[in-house]
Each structure stands twice: as structure tokens, then as C-alpha cells.
Length: 311
Image (spheres, one colour):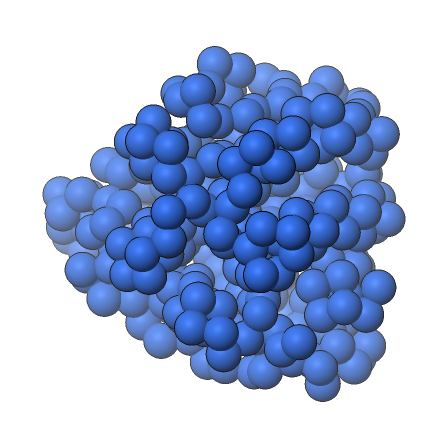
């Protein structure tokens, strides 16, 4: 089994201010841990290409892209909202994050690799068709799903989102594909946390499980066992795309859930088991949240160990 590890230098050039939690060190600490633990030695390293406008337009409107381009600064910062800021490298980083996810889908769907992990930023799952928000500019995971459907002819793709915040952007972009039965979206998130959406799914083919603040990994495991797995087994996905957020960890101050590294390992094991049953083992995982740097790196390490078959 071969697993791709896809990165790009622009991920460390985009930044939103000195004390912003969505910082370049996020991808650095992940890369450091994967190398120190020797995990990259078992992976195929690739540098992400930039995404084409055609690929991005599968998920986002031309008006949004034009708006973002118009305010992208030549120096300093430009604000999207109170939490989301651009610097001169932001759109390069966002484009290469999308390019990583699309390249991962190409590699997996053509059989060059079985799985892929994209260590890129900025995250994407809050970016809606017509709106950038919540640290996110372009929705890499949703674009990856649509690329698999439209470029590779897959009929059933599952998007799994375990970020602590609801993936409102992914749900917005994929609602038509969900309604058509081509996409199943399953997610967990902390109830009533930013952006305050997800309680009422936009499609019958969406399984959202809000988790109570201060609940721990056992609540997530119950949600996966009782809600996600029956839906995934009924859907029989040909590919699983993961919006892999690690901010439900108990050390993460941006939320109030109590997951630990073993929970991320268990969760990844469940997804690998589903992929092995229905998807020829095919998984594309792309980084979303996670802001306690040590916990983020350790949790990603457990996630990657399972993806490469080391755990």
C-alpha cells in the first residue's frame, strides 16, 4: 500500500497576524512529527500543484473568486471578516491547498496510491459557494469530492468531517450532489459552536451529529457507531474524503470537547475499515482545524499511522 503525503511551501507563507491561532506553525509541527517518527519514510512525498480556476469553479462562484482577487493585498493585510484575513500569499496557499486535494484524488482514483494526506493550509470547510469565512477561503474537501465525481466518474463519494466546528461550507456546496444521492456527508461538531449551523441538515443524505460541550471521546464513538457507520454502510462509498480537523482535542482552547489521540486513532480505523469494504481502501484526508500545536501534531500522527497501515 502506498500513501501520498502532499504539501506546499506556500502553506507557511499565509498568515493572519502574530497571535492568530490558524498559524504557519500548524503545518510545521505536523511535518516535524511525521519526519521524527519516520512516518514520511513510508509515504510518497509530493509538492502540491496550484488549482486551476476551472477546478475551483466546481464549488465556488466566479463572483466570489473575483471578490477575493480584488481585495487580495500586495502588502500587509486585508480583512474578510473579524477572524479571516489575507496577506499577499493567502491565495497562493489556498490555491495549492485545493491543488493538493485534487492531486490526491487523481492519485487515488488512478490507483497510483491507495490513500493520501494533505498537510496544507488554510483550512477550507467553512468556505461556502459564495462566501469566504471562518479562517477559510476555498473549500478543498468539497472541491475534491466534486472532482472525483466529475473528472473520475465516481457515483458515490462520502465526505467525512470530524472538525469541532460544523462544515457549513461543505454542506452548502454539496447539497445538490447529496440530494442526487451521489454524495453522503457525515459529521460531528460541538453543539452551538461557531458557525452555529448543522442542527438541521440541508439534505436527507447528510448525517450531522452535534456533540454536547464538555463531552469526551465516548460521545463521538457512539455517534460514529450508531449514526455514521450505518449510513456509510448503506451508501457504500467508492471514495472517502476526510475533512480532518483536530480541534476537538481536550487541549484545544478554541472548543470544549475532550477527545484524545486514541480517539483520532479509533476514528480513523473505522473509516479505513469502511474504505476497505467498499472503496478499495481509497481515502483522501485534508487538514482542517487544530490549534493546540502539540496535540495537533500527535493526533495527526495517530491518524497517519492508521492511514499507512502502521497501527
